[in-house]
Length: 448
Image (tube, rainbow, N blue to C red):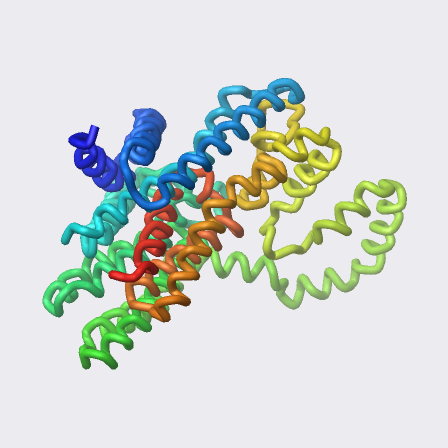
């Protein structure tokens, strides 16, 4: 079996390079991504079980507990839920545990690869190549007019190229661009100059998607890159990184009004802040509207009052998902105890298999869909590895530039998962959070 270890590690590394290719193939009707990712997950489990490495014992114990939980979760819903879209439920379970399994796999893999010269630059190079590939696809789609629209409303602009989900693509680029900045920082002066073109392409792609997550990713990546460049400038008296990244940030601000994200930000602001005429009309009608609302609230009774009490209608955080959250919340309260503990499955106890809507805030979806017990089990790896990394950082009292960069990528990934979703239960974007977390854990340990 030991002679297979190196081939398995090569497969796992190559699989990182294949990620955007799989998504493009899916867009054009070649549904191979799920089969390949399932196969990789199986290979990863064998890699953990069959070969010695860090965290092996706790990994095996955890997977046994996770397996038992998933079995109980599915059987319980099979008994309780009616209707139940079995294929959809199983797909959702796979997409969720994919992130968990691959996190353990790549933590082990990165500890093994540390002994090889490839590791220090190779992982960042792979992510950078993926980001450039996405950028090339985006610009070809722009030129040919074949890109999928990010939004389904004419007021908002942006496209996702040959990728389906704007939210997933935004999360991928937000994390991937931060890691690409680390690749840029590792280069010499001449190569940094050459990399201006591909980095600009990535930035252009992120601004053209038109989402706040992608735009925020650009600002955070360039910001942390400038900070890292300042550290480099102080320690080594090198000004190239800071100069280039500052110029890029200024360029982003300059072109913002011309890009889809600039239009979408204006739409958001105009929808949020009414003009003077609208304010006058609103003021004139406010009294009668308030009176009508009072009467309607009395007639509707306790149900609407509860909705307003638990979920404010104007919540910025929920971004219009109040109804989905309220429906899921009430489903959870009405669900039997077994479902409250082991989860209601995807989208809760739906009455029809058409329009199974998630809240699209990953941690909230985890809680309702997998119950209290499932939520704790799924969060355990994040708490365990996060605690391990924090402990090592405190012990060694060290915050290197690579550690700062990957920590930022992790925070962006987890923040996106919490606010916008489409990370923890979306394999295409989850793998970049996996890589960021695995790098954080490895870089926090002494020796890198």
